Amino acid sequence: MSDQHIKLPEGSIEKQTTTLNLGPTHPATHGVFQNILELDGERIISAEQTIGYIHRAFEKIAERRPLYQITPLTDRLNYCSAPINNMGWHITCEKLLGVQTPKRVDYLRVIIMELARIADHLICNSIVGVDTGAFTGFLYVMQYRELIYEIYEEVCGSRLTTNIGRIGGFERNFNNTAFEKIEKFLREYPKVLKEFENLFNRNRIFMERTIGCGPITAERALNYGFTGPNLRAAGVDYDVRVHTPYSSYEEFDFDIPVGSTGDCYDRFLVRNQEMWQSLRIIEQAMKKVKEFKGKEAEVFHADIPEFYLPEKKDVYTKMEALIWHFKIIMGEIDMPAGEVYQSVEGANGELGFYLITDGGRTPYRLHFRRPCFVYYQAYEEISKGAMLSDAIITLSSLNLIAGEMDA
Image (cartoon, rainbow, N blue to C red):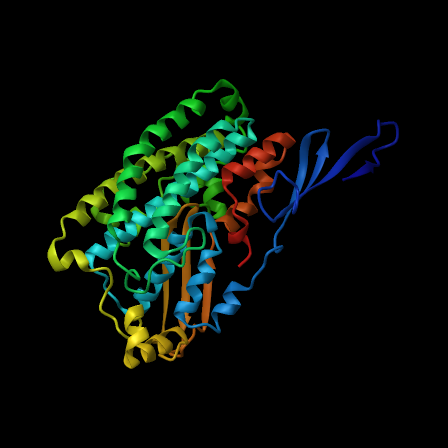
């Protein structure tokens, strides 16, 4: 922190401002990024954003990696909802390869992606509560993030950086324990979410801290390239799942929650409503999955032997499976030349993959469209003139995940 003395015209009173380094290790930033704020007392006069503190060169690394070795990179974008990143990448690969996934695979993917959306939103909204002085809600909902992570474990063995799924589907079929835990989540979480809303939605202190804090208009949000909950909170009902459906989302009945002011309160409400809609989608997907009987209930991947990894038990016992496993993992199979863009509705907005190949074994170019990178550009505008405490809440309500900043 430093003081700056600004020279004003002769005869006027000298004014003093303060420069505050909000990050990259400031306890209020919730991530590895920096804002250099100029403050007049506690009011923000200007802000300068800086990223690059965890730059890992994902896009450059991807130019030297076969398709499967890129999946773990996507885990580390928005690590609060990693399965959406993984499946978004696999759907991109399938678009390039011309793969049509079975319906049961689509429904299972929808279940996992919507669970990931809930896990992301409950973290975001409970942290907004913490930043307004309410810690109880955070502790209460976190046990259900743990339950979601237990479901991930049953499906793929991982919790945070999941590396979940395969090109064409999943590594294995969902076991009974996974379905039982999903059913448990559907039974218990609605009551918890309702209580969470009762703690905050009409709480006078929370409303006074968030209403009118960090607003952005629909026009400005569109100009910046906002998508996801932060755009919908400003009143624009754009949702990738509806406008360009993937994984059979067109078969599901759900609403797109929208706000009107684009402030912290509307962003909070939109994410809460999206959790309710995700619960609706999961319930519908579970019903669809239960309709499959016999051999159809055992389908969990498309038939693409050139890109789908053989079963582990075969890799350990059969030479042909071992060879194919090696060829796929090490990228010994050429992919078709082409140029595709595929986006999915990530928890924070449109997560896109722009893939160009020249027919070799690795991408010629891969660009990740990270929604948080877009939001962060607007932070200076929406925090200017606000109090320092409001700037912290604005950061939380935008749900800026540092992993999505630096690709």
